[in-house]
Length: 436
Image 1 (tube, one colour):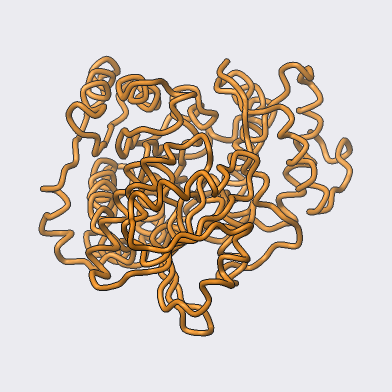
Image 2: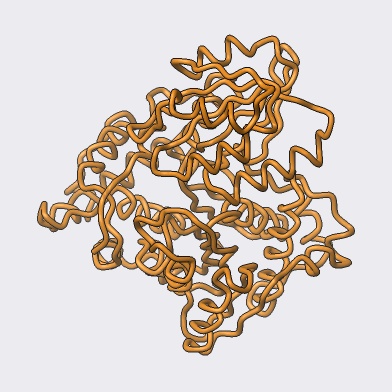
């Protein structure tokens, strides 16, 4: 991939190129990513990682780990998905988004390698982006990379790395069509990130995946540390006020602290630095409380599965016990939308149902009777768009927007909570495909 083989590409062209990669779908398997990384000089061999998988809490745990290690003076790469508004959110160094010029350059330099794949086995969007991130982090000489899985773990493109520690936040119901129709099968996919001799940290619970994770850790001769609510109430965490809302974040914080301790030998961090990192961590779109210029309080949370919805309901009830907000709800049809609605609708003084900007959206008309049954006292309105729902709820003092991270990203643009990129980049989150 020499400079002479590469023509220049603008950022707009690079985004269009990434959109075109969507036609290759999403494939679970490591062969393409390994080969693509090899063509790029195996940049992951020059990096150290903490690999994070799990059904819920991955992003928050990653944000806490990143904040802790950045506070310790390290140069920290952060790889997460999906993005909310800008593609560049996926690849950050010390919480600075990868510059547009670098996105264009990295893609340009990968073009010769991509031409070596037949169309029938062309790398997917996520495979290409994974190797882009590896190259960027290596070039930036990151001391440590916080590395979030995209889907599952065992066959996820991120699983070509050997980390300092493997973190599995928990196991719950999500992506069953990809990961399996039992919690044991889902846990087995997530446990696939466990590497020989590499320590494992998890908050998975008995009869909810823990046994599967423990068995795999035993097979790999990996030291397993299980975090529970007793750890979340420990002396260190009692001394810190978390920046992320919700009691469930204390368990994520305990995971982060335990992970830092598990790799203290290669990457030492002082206790006071851990506390500061936890208190300063930020993770947009997840239990994010914002205010509009008009003074309206808006709580944004991408609760898109049952455990996420329960966490949102518990956090809101605890934090705002006397508030009956307007609820803007939009969900994807491949989620457990009935259960999500039954959990979230009772929070509302008024519900506004919207489509999600995705081809997988569930028609809001389908949600309406479920909402009415779950909360008979709250008016329910079906809206043709998020914009319409925001206009109709503009006078409400408190607003919750939830049900999908795609919807949260759209809301952040509408409410000017996040800068709007020059082109629509939220559509890059769309994917479909099969296992290899």
